[in-house]
Length: 234
Image (cartoon, rainbow, N blue to C red; front, top):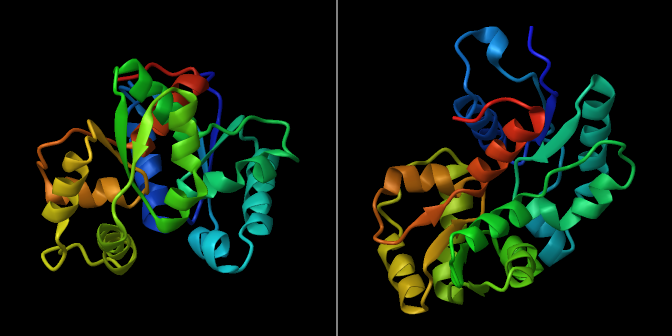
């Protein structure tokens, strides 16, 4: 029987992204049988209010339900928590304040990896809430990396990709000018794209080659969680 620490996922933001994160934990762990895998607890709390609406439009506060999920997971035996939502990290300090266990910070982990890659300018593709809140901007600037964002017009395309397509289960993106978004980011000097919404890596798996490298923060987070749990990484 393994002695790995138990990972808790604060999920429901959104449900598809939650199980994508869980799958990435599984896929990043060296295991030859059931017992070689890491214990994972998932609280897919779909009562958590929309984070972008709360940050930008005075929408319902997501923190009470996020904190409930965190406490449930801690009490159930989780040794570390991760959040399956980039925008949710705007509320990171509130989530952590009543916990005795650590919560891994996806944007900071991603910024550290980009620093190690030697990148000086990183494009941020994410929700309006993530972009405007500075969740990635602050993390990148702390590492001396310049964040680059889409124009207002191209940001509307990214928001539609996230909300009208992936979250809605519509995985045909032919009505969206994704090429225009990529061209603009290249023109602004982005050396790499941060797929800074947990729905975006799923979309870009379908979109395919774009001519610019991208980084999946969900995968970065999953790998950090596997390491924290004490399991060998693939």
